[in-house]
Image (cartoon, rainbow, N blue to C red; front, side, top):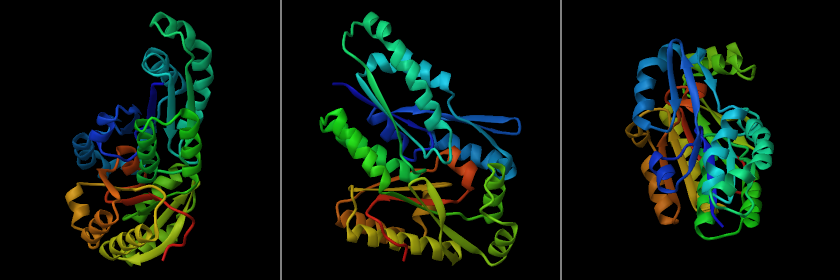
Length: 313
């Protein structure tokens, strides 16, 4: 059986990984003033757009995910021919309409694929499954890497589906948001009042960096640390502790809202790399997708992994 994988462009993994494993993207388009860029996970284009537009107008940006019709067209024009079964992994539905759009599109796809496959010489059924990863950014990347591993190991679709749906419950993303005023402006634009003006003002004045945790679609603060260097060192050390305690997959994902050289210069990064190598954990590093940077701000740092329930310490 030919099994394919689709993710949206908020999934933070290196562009080369998508190409190597033939992962199809559902791109998100970002509009800042008169400037527009569709996020195809091109790191250089993302960094150029970041420097040119994000600092001045990112808080007022608009994002346009693939519509129901665009998803339907992508499947019917290509994927129902190239594959027999497709897994579509989306960013958490609590933060994006992509899951709902893909689910709605799936009904029409499954009703209309037969003559298209027949014309291409395929007389077998086509199936697809839309899975809410219940996570964001580097956290979403963890689930995608596991899907690739299972597909390339030759596992059947029912086993892959069960594994991914269970893994979504145990995937964690931890993020340092460097600019509370920017984060407040973006959350308010999305109708979220979780970051108050007072907390943003006090946090910025005192150089406080919150560490946010996303799991099962819910996001909230787990720590507040003074200074970006101290916050990064704390987060990297915590990730190392989770590795030593045992992860559910041999994968750690990092994404950063800027050039990776900046992330690699943060305190604690080198120790985390050594820990990953010592415990045979594959480390993925990428510039954060444009969609993520627009929503959380330049310089954000995210760590993603899968593990049993735990407390941030």
